[in-house]
Image (cartoon, rainbow, N blue to C red):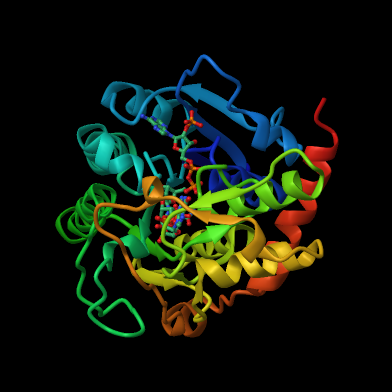
Length: 325
Ligand code: NAP
Ligand code: F7E
Protein backbone atom coordinates (compact mmCIF):
# COMPACT_ATOMS: atom_id res chain seq x y z
CA UNK A 1 0.00 0.00 0.00
CA UNK A 2 1.25 3.51 -0.87
CA UNK A 3 2.36 5.70 2.00
CA UNK A 4 -0.22 8.13 3.41
CA UNK A 5 0.24 11.82 2.60
CA UNK A 6 -0.16 14.63 5.11
CA UNK A 7 -0.26 18.39 4.55
CA UNK A 8 0.97 20.70 7.31
CA UNK A 9 0.38 24.46 7.30
CA UNK A 10 2.86 26.27 9.53
CA UNK A 11 5.50 23.63 8.80
CA UNK A 12 8.32 26.14 9.40
CA UNK A 13 7.09 26.87 12.94
CA UNK A 14 8.01 25.05 16.15
CA UNK A 15 5.15 22.53 16.05
CA UNK A 16 5.27 22.15 12.26
CA UNK A 17 8.88 21.00 12.44
CA UNK A 18 8.28 18.48 15.26
CA UNK A 19 5.10 17.18 13.57
CA UNK A 20 6.86 16.81 10.21
CA UNK A 21 9.58 14.73 11.90
CA UNK A 22 6.99 12.58 13.71
CA UNK A 23 5.02 11.89 10.52
CA UNK A 24 8.14 11.17 8.45
CA UNK A 25 9.27 8.70 11.11
CA UNK A 26 5.83 7.03 10.81
CA UNK A 27 6.27 6.66 7.03
CA UNK A 28 4.07 9.50 5.77
CA UNK A 29 4.81 11.60 2.68
CA UNK A 30 4.87 15.04 4.28
CA UNK A 31 3.91 18.19 2.39
CA UNK A 32 4.22 21.63 3.94
CA UNK A 33 2.61 24.90 2.97
CA UNK A 34 5.44 27.38 2.64
CA UNK A 35 4.65 31.08 2.67
CA UNK A 36 7.41 32.88 0.76
CA UNK A 37 9.55 35.07 3.05
CA UNK A 38 12.71 37.06 2.33
CA UNK A 39 14.55 35.36 5.21
CA UNK A 40 15.41 31.69 5.85
CA UNK A 41 12.51 30.12 7.71
CA UNK A 42 13.67 26.53 7.21
CA UNK A 43 16.13 26.42 10.13
CA UNK A 44 13.88 24.29 12.36
CA UNK A 45 13.37 21.66 9.65
CA UNK A 46 17.15 21.72 9.06
CA UNK A 47 17.77 21.32 12.80
CA UNK A 48 15.60 18.16 12.90
CA UNK A 49 17.19 16.82 9.70
CA UNK A 50 13.95 16.68 7.68
CA UNK A 51 14.36 19.71 5.40
CA UNK A 52 15.18 17.61 2.33
CA UNK A 53 12.46 15.02 3.04
CA UNK A 54 9.45 17.34 3.35
CA UNK A 55 7.92 18.59 0.12
CA UNK A 56 7.21 22.29 0.28
CA UNK A 57 4.28 23.79 -1.61
CA UNK A 58 4.20 27.58 -2.06
CA UNK A 59 1.09 29.13 -0.57
CA UNK A 60 -0.46 31.38 2.03
CA UNK A 61 -3.32 30.89 4.47
CA UNK A 62 -4.93 34.04 3.13
CA UNK A 63 -4.97 32.73 -0.45
CA UNK A 64 -7.66 30.05 -0.91
CA UNK A 65 -6.53 29.11 -4.41
CA UNK A 66 -3.03 28.27 -3.15
CA UNK A 67 -4.58 26.04 -0.47
CA UNK A 68 -6.69 24.24 -3.07
CA UNK A 69 -3.53 23.68 -5.12
CA UNK A 70 -1.69 22.39 -2.05
CA UNK A 71 -4.52 19.92 -1.38
CA UNK A 72 -4.48 18.75 -5.00
CA UNK A 73 -0.72 18.42 -5.15
CA UNK A 74 -0.31 16.64 -1.83
CA UNK A 75 -3.34 14.31 -2.15
CA UNK A 76 -3.31 14.56 1.63
CA UNK A 77 -5.57 12.36 3.71
CA UNK A 78 -4.55 14.22 6.88
CA UNK A 79 -4.34 18.02 7.07
CA UNK A 80 -2.84 19.79 10.08
CA UNK A 81 -3.58 23.53 10.24
CA UNK A 82 -0.76 24.87 12.41
CA UNK A 83 -0.15 28.12 10.51
CA UNK A 84 -1.02 31.30 12.39
CA UNK A 85 0.10 34.72 13.56
CA UNK A 86 0.70 33.05 16.91
CA UNK A 87 2.32 35.73 19.09
CA UNK A 88 -0.29 37.10 21.50
CA UNK A 89 1.53 40.42 22.04
CA UNK A 90 1.58 41.21 18.31
CA UNK A 91 -2.15 40.56 18.01
CA UNK A 92 -2.90 43.94 19.60
CA UNK A 93 -0.64 45.73 17.08
CA UNK A 94 -1.92 43.73 14.09
CA UNK A 95 -5.47 42.66 14.99
CA UNK A 96 -6.74 42.62 11.41
CA UNK A 97 -3.85 40.54 10.10
CA UNK A 98 -4.26 38.19 13.07
CA UNK A 99 -7.98 37.80 12.32
CA UNK A 100 -7.24 37.09 8.66
CA UNK A 101 -4.36 34.63 9.10
CA UNK A 102 -5.31 32.94 12.38
CA UNK A 103 -9.10 33.09 12.01
CA UNK A 104 -10.14 33.24 8.35
CA UNK A 105 -6.98 31.32 7.37
CA UNK A 106 -8.38 28.26 9.16
CA UNK A 107 -11.67 28.69 7.30
CA UNK A 108 -9.74 28.81 4.02
CA UNK A 109 -8.05 25.51 4.86
CA UNK A 110 -11.40 23.93 5.80
CA UNK A 111 -12.84 25.12 2.50
CA UNK A 112 -9.90 23.75 0.51
CA UNK A 113 -10.30 20.38 2.24
CA UNK A 114 -14.09 20.37 1.64
CA UNK A 115 -13.66 21.27 -2.04
CA UNK A 116 -10.78 18.90 -2.88
CA UNK A 117 -11.31 15.92 -0.57
CA UNK A 118 -13.97 16.23 2.12
CA UNK A 119 -12.95 12.81 3.45
CA UNK A 120 -9.50 14.03 4.46
CA UNK A 121 -9.07 14.37 8.22
CA UNK A 122 -8.46 17.89 9.55
CA UNK A 123 -6.67 19.11 12.69
CA UNK A 124 -7.10 22.67 13.99
CA UNK A 125 -4.50 24.15 16.34
CA UNK A 126 -6.80 25.63 18.97
CA UNK A 127 -5.40 27.15 22.12
CA UNK A 128 -5.80 27.66 25.86
CA UNK A 129 -5.80 31.42 25.07
CA UNK A 130 -9.50 30.91 24.25
CA UNK A 131 -10.11 30.41 28.01
CA UNK A 132 -8.51 33.81 28.73
CA UNK A 133 -10.27 35.13 31.83
CA UNK A 134 -10.76 31.66 33.21
CA UNK A 135 -14.26 30.53 34.18
CA UNK A 136 -13.08 27.39 36.01
CA UNK A 137 -9.95 26.71 38.05
CA UNK A 138 -8.95 23.77 35.79
CA UNK A 139 -9.94 24.22 32.17
CA UNK A 140 -11.42 21.27 30.26
CA UNK A 141 -13.36 20.82 27.01
CA UNK A 142 -16.49 21.88 28.94
CA UNK A 143 -15.13 25.17 30.31
CA UNK A 144 -16.74 28.30 28.78
CA UNK A 145 -14.42 30.51 26.73
CA UNK A 146 -13.55 34.15 27.52
CA UNK A 147 -10.69 35.21 25.20
CA UNK A 148 -8.68 38.28 26.21
CA UNK A 149 -6.62 39.03 23.09
CA UNK A 150 -7.30 39.53 19.37
CA UNK A 151 -5.30 36.29 18.93
CA UNK A 152 -7.58 34.36 21.31
CA UNK A 153 -10.66 35.73 19.54
CA UNK A 154 -9.34 34.80 16.08
CA UNK A 155 -8.58 31.29 17.37
CA UNK A 156 -12.07 31.00 18.84
CA UNK A 157 -13.55 31.79 15.41
CA UNK A 158 -11.36 29.06 13.85
CA UNK A 159 -12.32 26.65 16.64
CA UNK A 160 -16.06 27.11 16.07
CA UNK A 161 -15.60 26.92 12.29
CA UNK A 162 -13.93 23.54 12.78
CA UNK A 163 -16.88 22.33 14.86
CA UNK A 164 -19.27 23.78 12.27
CA UNK A 165 -17.60 21.91 9.38
CA UNK A 166 -17.82 18.74 11.43
CA UNK A 167 -21.51 19.28 12.15
CA UNK A 168 -22.62 20.74 8.78
CA UNK A 169 -20.49 18.80 6.31
CA UNK A 170 -19.78 15.65 8.32
CA UNK A 171 -16.05 16.26 8.03
CA UNK A 172 -13.54 14.53 10.30
CA UNK A 173 -12.44 17.86 11.80
CA UNK A 174 -10.86 17.92 15.27
CA UNK A 175 -9.51 20.68 17.47
CA UNK A 176 -6.66 20.31 19.91
CA UNK A 177 -6.99 22.90 22.66
CA UNK A 178 -3.30 22.99 23.44
CA UNK A 179 -1.82 24.75 26.45
CA UNK A 180 1.60 26.42 26.13
CA UNK A 181 4.26 24.11 24.79
CA UNK A 182 7.90 24.95 24.34
CA UNK A 183 11.20 23.52 23.14
CA UNK A 184 14.67 24.60 21.99
CA UNK A 185 12.90 25.42 18.67
CA UNK A 186 10.51 27.92 20.30
CA UNK A 187 10.43 31.43 18.78
CA UNK A 188 12.61 33.91 20.69
CA UNK A 189 9.66 36.27 21.33
CA UNK A 190 7.90 33.79 23.65
CA UNK A 191 8.78 34.12 27.31
CA UNK A 192 10.43 30.72 27.93
CA UNK A 193 12.85 31.06 25.01
CA UNK A 194 13.45 34.74 25.79
CA UNK A 195 14.48 33.66 29.29
CA UNK A 196 16.62 30.64 28.32
CA UNK A 197 18.41 32.62 25.60
CA UNK A 198 19.07 35.46 28.07
CA UNK A 199 20.35 33.02 30.71
CA UNK A 200 22.87 31.66 28.20
CA UNK A 201 23.97 35.16 27.14
CA UNK A 202 24.27 36.41 30.72
CA UNK A 203 26.26 33.32 31.76
CA UNK A 204 28.62 33.87 28.81
CA UNK A 205 29.01 37.60 29.47
CA UNK A 206 27.13 38.68 26.31
CA UNK A 207 24.13 40.26 28.09
CA UNK A 208 23.76 41.89 31.49
CA UNK A 209 20.06 41.98 32.31
CA UNK A 210 16.73 40.46 31.25
CA UNK A 211 13.77 42.81 30.81
CA UNK A 212 10.36 41.16 31.31
CA UNK A 213 6.72 42.18 31.79
CA UNK A 214 4.27 40.45 34.13
CA UNK A 215 6.19 37.68 35.89
CA UNK A 216 3.26 36.83 38.17
CA UNK A 217 1.22 35.26 35.38
CA UNK A 218 0.99 31.47 35.45
CA UNK A 219 1.10 29.01 32.59
CA UNK A 220 0.70 25.25 32.11
CA UNK A 221 3.89 24.59 30.13
CA UNK A 222 4.71 21.32 28.35
CA UNK A 223 7.18 20.04 25.74
CA UNK A 224 6.22 20.54 22.06
CA UNK A 225 7.63 17.11 21.13
CA UNK A 226 4.99 15.49 23.38
CA UNK A 227 2.17 17.69 22.07
CA UNK A 228 2.53 16.89 18.35
CA UNK A 229 1.95 13.23 19.25
CA UNK A 230 -1.48 14.23 20.61
CA UNK A 231 -2.30 15.99 17.30
CA UNK A 232 -1.58 12.81 15.35
CA UNK A 233 -3.55 10.65 17.80
CA UNK A 234 -6.63 12.88 17.34
CA UNK A 235 -6.68 12.16 13.61
CA UNK A 236 -6.39 8.39 14.21
CA UNK A 237 -9.70 8.28 16.16
CA UNK A 238 -12.86 6.92 14.49
CA UNK A 239 -14.74 10.09 15.41
CA UNK A 240 -13.52 13.68 15.26
CA UNK A 241 -13.64 15.53 18.58
CA UNK A 242 -12.04 18.31 20.67
CA UNK A 243 -9.34 17.61 23.24
CA UNK A 244 -7.52 19.65 25.88
CA UNK A 245 -3.78 18.89 25.82
CA UNK A 246 -1.91 20.04 28.92
CA UNK A 247 0.32 18.88 31.78
CA UNK A 248 -2.12 19.72 34.60
CA UNK A 249 0.56 21.79 36.41
CA UNK A 250 0.85 25.58 36.45
CA UNK A 251 3.86 27.76 37.34
CA UNK A 252 4.56 31.50 37.47
CA UNK A 253 6.86 33.13 34.93
CA UNK A 254 8.95 34.11 37.99
CA UNK A 255 9.48 30.46 39.03
CA UNK A 256 10.20 29.42 35.45
CA UNK A 257 12.95 32.11 35.44
CA UNK A 258 14.32 30.87 38.74
CA UNK A 259 14.63 27.33 37.34
CA UNK A 260 16.44 28.62 34.22
CA UNK A 261 18.97 30.81 36.09
CA UNK A 262 19.58 28.21 38.81
CA UNK A 263 20.53 25.66 36.16
CA UNK A 264 23.66 27.71 35.37
CA UNK A 265 24.29 28.67 39.01
CA UNK A 266 22.84 32.21 38.83
CA UNK A 267 20.23 34.06 40.93
CA UNK A 268 17.42 35.41 38.72
CA UNK A 269 16.69 38.26 41.18
CA UNK A 270 20.03 39.85 40.27
CA UNK A 271 19.27 40.03 36.52
CA UNK A 272 15.52 40.32 35.90
CA UNK A 273 14.29 43.90 35.41
CA UNK A 274 10.55 44.61 35.15
CA UNK A 275 9.75 46.74 32.10
CA UNK A 276 6.14 47.96 31.60
CA UNK A 277 6.79 47.84 27.85
CA UNK A 278 6.21 44.07 28.01
CA UNK A 279 2.88 44.24 29.87
CA UNK A 280 -0.18 43.34 27.80
CA UNK A 281 -3.32 45.50 27.47
CA UNK A 282 -5.33 42.58 28.91
CA UNK A 283 -3.50 39.73 30.62
CA UNK A 284 -4.40 36.07 30.95
CA UNK A 285 -3.38 35.69 34.60
CA UNK A 286 -3.48 31.93 34.95
CA UNK A 287 -4.00 28.85 32.80
CA UNK A 288 -4.22 25.30 34.09
CA UNK A 289 -5.44 22.48 31.89
CA UNK A 290 -7.32 19.30 32.70
CA UNK A 291 -6.06 16.70 30.19
CA UNK A 292 -8.26 13.83 31.52
CA UNK A 293 -10.11 13.33 28.21
CA UNK A 294 -6.86 13.13 26.20
CA UNK A 295 -5.43 10.69 28.75
CA UNK A 296 -8.54 8.46 28.74
CA UNK A 297 -9.52 8.55 25.06
CA UNK A 298 -6.21 9.10 23.26
CA UNK A 299 -3.94 7.36 25.73
CA UNK A 300 -1.79 10.52 25.61
CA UNK A 301 0.16 11.89 28.54
CA UNK A 302 2.74 14.67 28.95
CA UNK A 303 6.12 13.09 29.67
CA UNK A 304 8.28 16.15 30.32
CA UNK A 305 8.08 18.26 33.49
CA UNK A 306 8.92 21.98 33.53
CA UNK A 307 12.38 21.61 35.09
CA UNK A 308 13.38 19.02 32.47
CA UNK A 309 11.98 21.23 29.69
CA UNK A 310 13.66 24.47 30.82
CA UNK A 311 16.94 22.66 31.49
CA UNK A 312 16.85 21.23 27.94
CA UNK A 313 16.21 24.73 26.54
CA UNK A 314 18.98 26.39 28.59
CA UNK A 315 21.46 23.69 27.52
CA UNK A 316 20.54 24.18 23.84
CA UNK A 317 20.90 27.97 24.15
CA UNK A 318 24.22 27.66 26.01
CA UNK A 319 25.53 25.67 23.04
CA UNK A 320 24.01 27.96 20.42
CA UNK A 321 25.29 31.17 22.07
CA UNK A 322 28.80 29.72 22.54
CA UNK A 323 28.97 29.01 18.79
CA UNK A 324 28.00 32.54 17.75
CA UNK A 325 30.77 34.54 16.12
P1 NAP B 1 4.89 29.36 15.30
O1 NAP B 1 6.24 28.80 15.64
O2 NAP B 1 4.64 30.82 15.49
O3 NAP B 1 4.60 28.98 13.77
C1 NAP B 1 3.61 29.61 13.01
C2 NAP B 1 3.68 29.12 11.58
O4 NAP B 1 2.65 29.78 10.83
C3 NAP B 1 5.00 29.43 10.86
O5 NAP B 1 5.34 28.31 10.06
C4 NAP B 1 4.62 30.60 9.95
O6 NAP B 1 5.41 30.68 8.77
C5 NAP B 1 3.20 30.21 9.59
N1 NAP B 1 2.45 31.34 9.03
C6 NAP B 1 2.30 32.58 9.54
N2 NAP B 1 1.55 33.34 8.72
C7 NAP B 1 1.23 32.56 7.65
C8 NAP B 1 0.47 32.77 6.47
N3 NAP B 1 -0.11 33.95 6.20
N4 NAP B 1 0.35 31.75 5.59
C9 NAP B 1 0.94 30.54 5.83
N5 NAP B 1 1.67 30.28 6.95
C10 NAP B 1 1.80 31.28 7.85
O7 NAP B 1 3.74 28.59 16.10
P2 NAP B 1 3.82 27.23 16.94
O8 NAP B 1 4.26 27.52 18.32
O9 NAP B 1 4.52 26.21 16.13
O10 NAP B 1 2.28 26.86 17.04
C11 NAP B 1 1.63 26.11 16.01
C12 NAP B 1 0.15 26.42 16.03
O11 NAP B 1 -0.39 26.07 17.30
C13 NAP B 1 -0.19 27.89 15.82
O12 NAP B 1 -1.43 27.93 15.11
C14 NAP B 1 -0.38 28.41 17.23
O13 NAP B 1 -1.25 29.53 17.22
C15 NAP B 1 -1.01 27.21 17.89
N6 NAP B 1 -0.76 27.04 19.32
C16 NAP B 1 0.49 27.11 19.81
C17 NAP B 1 0.72 26.89 21.15
C18 NAP B 1 2.11 26.92 21.74
O14 NAP B 1 2.23 27.01 22.96
N7 NAP B 1 3.15 26.78 20.93
C19 NAP B 1 -0.37 26.59 22.01
C20 NAP B 1 -1.63 26.50 21.45
C21 NAP B 1 -1.82 26.71 20.11
P3 NAP B 1 6.78 31.56 8.71
O15 NAP B 1 7.81 30.72 9.41
O16 NAP B 1 7.03 31.69 7.26
O17 NAP B 1 6.48 32.84 9.40
O1 F7E C 1 3.69 34.64 27.37
C1 F7E C 1 4.25 36.82 30.28
C2 F7E C 1 3.10 37.15 29.35
O2 F7E C 1 4.26 35.06 24.98
C3 F7E C 1 3.48 33.88 28.53
C4 F7E C 1 1.56 31.24 22.32
O3 F7E C 1 2.20 30.07 21.87
O4 F7E C 1 0.78 30.16 24.30
C5 F7E C 1 1.53 31.26 23.83
O5 F7E C 1 0.96 32.48 24.27
C6 F7E C 1 3.27 34.79 29.74
C7 F7E C 1 2.24 35.91 29.52
O6 F7E C 1 2.94 32.99 25.65
C8 F7E C 1 7.14 38.62 29.08
O7 F7E C 1 2.48 38.37 29.73
C9 F7E C 1 6.10 38.35 30.96
O8 F7E C 1 1.46 36.04 30.67
O9 F7E C 1 5.32 33.10 26.17
P1 F7E C 1 4.14 33.97 25.98
P2 F7E C 1 1.36 33.18 25.64
O10 F7E C 1 0.94 34.58 25.55
O11 F7E C 1 0.83 32.39 26.79
C10 F7E C 1 -0.58 30.12 23.87
C11 F7E C 1 -1.20 28.87 24.43
C12 F7E C 1 -0.73 30.27 22.41
O12 F7E C 1 -1.64 29.73 21.80
C13 F7E C 1 0.14 31.29 21.75
O13 F7E C 1 0.22 31.05 20.36
O14 F7E C 1 4.51 35.45 30.02
N1 F7E C 1 5.46 37.61 30.04
N2 F7E C 1 7.15 38.99 30.39
C14 F7E C 1 6.07 37.75 28.86
N3 F7E C 1 5.81 37.21 27.66
C15 F7E C 1 6.63 37.53 26.64
N4 F7E C 1 6.42 36.97 25.43
N5 F7E C 1 7.70 38.40 26.80
C16 F7E C 1 7.99 38.97 28.00
O15 F7E C 1 8.93 39.73 28.11
